[in-house]
Length: 468
Image (cartoon, rainbow, N blue to C red):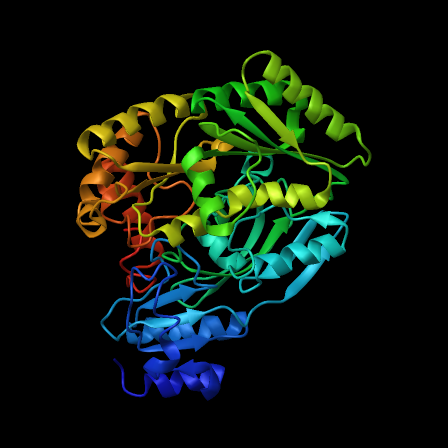
C-alpha cells in the first residue's frame, strides 16, 4: 500500500466517507448470503462521478485493487473484497439521484446508487413503467443490476436489464470517464460499448449513471395461479397463453408442490386450491387499456386450457389484494427455503422448449446419486430461467450433504450444458462460479474475455478475482 493512501482518499471524498475501522466496514465486506467475508483496506463512499474518477485514478497510480459495490445484494460474491486487507471498496450508494426523466422519449437517467424501488417510483409518478422487478428491489441499486444484467419476473415481456439500457456513464480503470449517456434507440456508429459493461460485474469499469427505457403504465392487470401435472404441461400452457394473449403476458412463473409447502409452512398463507397438485404456474397479464376485458381474457384462456387437459385447475384474482396474495406464493419461496435450512442453489437457463426434459432428466440423475434429495425448483420459466435448488433428504445429515456441493453442482451443471443451457442466468459469476465456468465455456471464448479485460484494465485493478 502506498504511504498516505487513506489520507489521499479522504481528501477526495471527505474524511467522513472513508471507512477503515473493521467495525464500520463489516457490512460492506460480507456478501448477501454470508458465504464470503473479506477484509478491505477501506470503504470509499463517493458522491459524484468526478469523485469516483479521482478515486480510481489514485488507485491506478498506486496499483490498488478496486471493488465496486452498490446495494450489496448480489448472490455470487461479486462485490465482496478478498481477505488481503489491500483492496478498496468503492460504494456508489451516495450517488442516488434521478438526473432526468423524459416522458416523450420514454427514458429516465439515474445514478448508479439509485435503489431500484425508488427508480420504479419515479417512473410511476411520471405515469410510466420501469419494468425491472425482483425480490431485492427495496435495497438493490441500479448500478449493481446493470453490472450483473439482472433479470426478474418481467423478462418475458420486457427483457433483461441489458435490454432496458440505452446509455451509460462509466469510470474506466484509468480514471477516465466515458460519457455515453445517450437516450437513442438507434445509434449505428460503431461498437456498442455500453454492452461491454452491462453484465461485466465491475471488472471493466464502474458504471456511475445510466439512461434507461420507460414504458406506458399498465391500466389493467389480471393475475392467476394454475395447477399442473408436470413442467412439460407448464410449457404447453405457456404456448397456449401466448397464442391467446400475445404480449399481454407479463409474467409466467413456475413453482413446485414442495415450494408451495415450504411457503405455507413458514409464512402461514392459505393454499390456492383445496387439493394439492404437483406443479403450479403464476401468470400475469397486463394492458394499457383499463377495464374488465383483461380478466375476461384470462378466464377464457385458462378455461380453455382446463378443457384441453393442459391445466388441472386455476384461480384468478378478483382484486388487487388477492393478486398480491397470489404473488406471495411465488415471491416468498426463497425466504421459505432459507428458513427451512441451507440448500445447494443453481441459477440456470435452459432453452424454453427443453425445460420439461431438463427437469425430468436432472431430477432422476440427482435422485440416483443422492437418494432422498428434495428438489425445490421454481423460476421464470417464461424466459427459460430456473432456480433449481437441491435440499438434503428430510431427516438426513444436512452438513454431510452440503459437503458434497461440488458433486451436486457437477451433476446439475453437466446436465445444463447437455441441454444447451447456461450455469448463470441472472445472478452472474462473481467469485462463486469463476472457476466453474472454465468447464463450460470454450477456450476461445475465455481468451476473448481475457483480451477485453487486458485491453481495458491492463493493470488488473478492477474487481480482481471475479468473473475471470
